[in-house]
Image 1 (tube, rainbow, N blue to C red):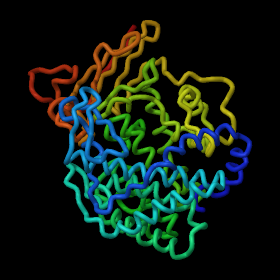
Image 2: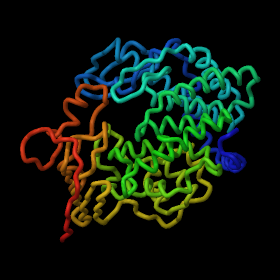
Image 3: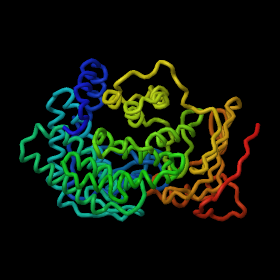
Image 4: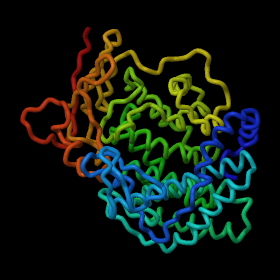
Length: 463
């Protein structure tokens, strides 16, 4: 097994000593284990962000037994056909991929063969059909897919499938190892390598992370070199994609953490090898800077593209791993703040020592001026007041037309909020949420704010 090199005996010992955690993981996995296996026989999956009501801009209610009927949770209207049917299959592919990782881990922890058998069934089923999936997808700003309709979604699914395969590979006969390893995983690696774009982008982070993990699982150093060291690989993204304070250039807190999830998915396999980038200067800044923007209720401002719910500080998968690597009390404070929403799997895998007894408050009390990120946040904790000004450089497709935008927080909520956005496949994303009129900002005339670079902002702090 390539994962958890040198760590598995400690993980197994923690698992044996914490029956309650294992019982929780088993309970969470039971619906996945019992779910019927549904694998698309052709490449019909499209985009999960099409799975939104065109009238209300809310996510439709996904049901595993309803591939052709999709209900709006607001008024119950039902939609069928495209793009919703294809988006339903995208969700199913994602659930199948996640099941491979989750059930594969449980097989390693418990030795219960039904977990392994379900992973085997899924991987063999996809290996049977993957080579014949047609390349498809016309999503704006996205490369195509085979299993799904964009390269990013392909990478996300293959990443989890590769982890699931790594868990069960040693239990499979050579013929099945060959079928899954070559017909599914290597075929996917060839596709991903051909469709990584020459750009700095969260997509390229996730694609490169998947390629790097496939390189480890398939023992292919050419894949690892392409993923890490070649232009637009992981090292390139870190060297060119961060603003001065460590914020991901797209200017969205959600996409900052989304990119970091890609980097850390790779690092969880790469740590201790010559391919790891953990010794570089990038990750500590990426982990720390966003915390300077946390609001009194433990959420982030909805800067740029951010769907409802994505503004919450959670990200325990990142901060559990960060605590394992650096043991920084700031990272521990995030885990303590979010302990009511514990991630039992990540805690079991990476919590090698107890958190400090002394609790640090991760919610800042001081104002910040971050000229590189283009964000200024005035705080008056005693008045429960915060004012944020956005004067950031243009961040690309996930940015909004809102310079100089203002957000005002008072007491228990926003007085002047940024609404974020809805699903990108919904009409209201472009027609409403991204535009200047939906933000609160200083303008000289009521026109759409341009995609511009602000050269500087002079600020004076006062009482």
